[in-house]
Image (tube, rainbow, N blue to C red; front, side, top):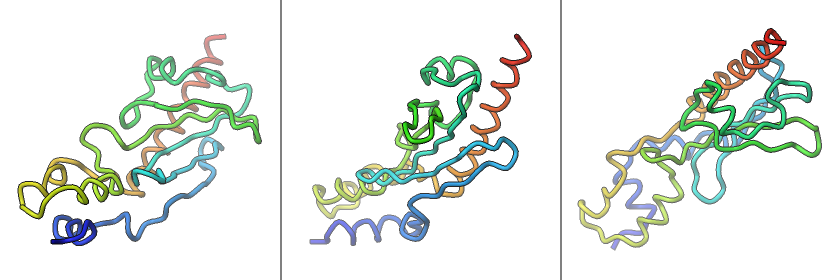
Length: 157
């Protein structure tokens, strides 16, 4: 009987999550917004965040409202909350939607399936792992969209 790690290695030869960073923070050079990519501790997928300053047109808004205002990011925004330390408002998205591959979740599930090819391939054939570089690019797209949203709001005043 194979253990879960062995099953994962047999099914998935390319496992970028084993070699990429778990998090990174930077300031987006065009917008000046703090950007973050962070790995979910339990499921293993990546999340992306952009922090906007007080005075931004979208500061304090619910993420559903911002989604409705034309923000297009993977799976839509799923997070909005104030960073109590900096006073910035943080919007975020996750890569744990239908069709996304979460490595730690898959590893946990593989502990409970038998070693047959049919059982072991339960999700790995159809789900896509969103790599660190892919999520970082999506965070940059979000930062630019939030900047444009702020500029549009100021033009409307």
